[in-house]
Length: 402
Ligand SMILES: Cc1cc2nc3c(=O)[nH]c(=O)nc-3n(C[C@H](O)[C@H](O)[C@H](O)COP(=O)(O)OP(=O)(O)OC[C@H]3O[C@@H](n4cnc5c(N)ncnc54)[C@H](O)[C@@H]3O)c2cc1C
Image (cartoon, rainbow, N blue to C red; front, side, top):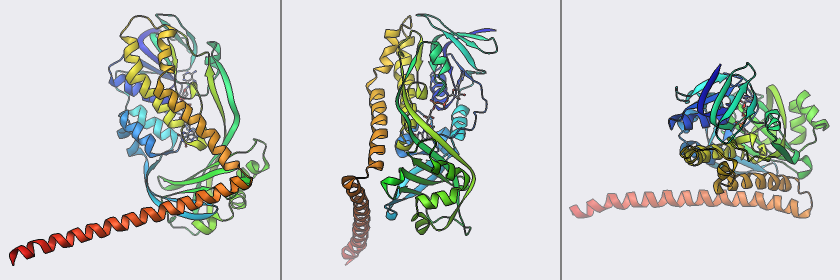
């Protein structure tokens, strides 16, 4: 069957689903295609930080996502195996599949969803043709390629892939419970690697529904014996890696499946084609440890849908040079650059094992301690000045009466 639309979005992950919400709300004629409805469970971003929540608000998506997430209000920070600070935060725990489902629920009804796999795309200056594996064809003025890590479709269009850093980091996800039952004393905890030789960036624990979720960010080769150990005997392997952790959070047990996910950093090449634009992981990946992937995905979609698509649709044709404005967008470029720099900077900091690296680790611990002392001091001063102004206000009217 042949259909037509102004825009076809290929892939309904975080990038494609948010684009469908934004473009649908702007009354564009959109078709979204994905093989899975509901989306498949996938081990991806499980925690949203304040910068990501701000982006969601800016895109009008926060009202969809945040009610499905668990609000974490206090963060403990531990460095060198010692608690350095307890600070207020605004973070949210949410499984990736839950987040994508929540965004998809906000797609306006006029956006047509096709459950299927795109098997081929033909591009031209004016009309694009998107073929599904089941034989259906959708024609459109613009194709938004948001199909994540799937390289085959990009390859068929002559789009290349430059690997920036193979197996840049390995993320490990699992649930933790207190061995003695009850609840942990904290909402969330960032526990940095105890020593650079451990090849750990940090462990983050955060409330996600009824469980305490853990994401451990490491730098290990895929055949590293410790990765085998964490799958087979997770508590033993984690306690060996972070011997001081139990002293801080209490004895713990690891529950359910342990997910181990290596991440390559790559960027798509030869992306300028008529009628086609790449967003999210389809354009470039990010390092999960740096925690910038969701910013990159959302920023791509926000710029595309609120700035570029309205301009492109308002003039005839979809030439490659016209669409290149998206890849040159200063905000997109700054976000991509920040994401890539953070990935390398965090790895270098985490693995710096010489005297300077070790000294820097101690300075970061002291810096965090000092920030905590300063914050608590200023909170106390603020409370005292509030109390003083309340007292003087009470005395004021009494003097007038006399
Ligand atoms: C282990 C891990 C942990 C992460 N942790 C964090 C974190 O803590 N913080 C953070 O900010 N970021 C994190 N990220 C990054 C972030 O989650 C992802 O980069 C981002 O969600 C990618 O979204 P996407 O929509 O581009 O791709 P995807 O979510 O992969 O979506 C692609 C979609 O395309 C569909 N598709 C594929 N092929 C086809 C086809 N031929 N036809 C139709 N549809 C197709 C798929 O079904 C899928 O729905 C993490 C990533 C990983 C891997």
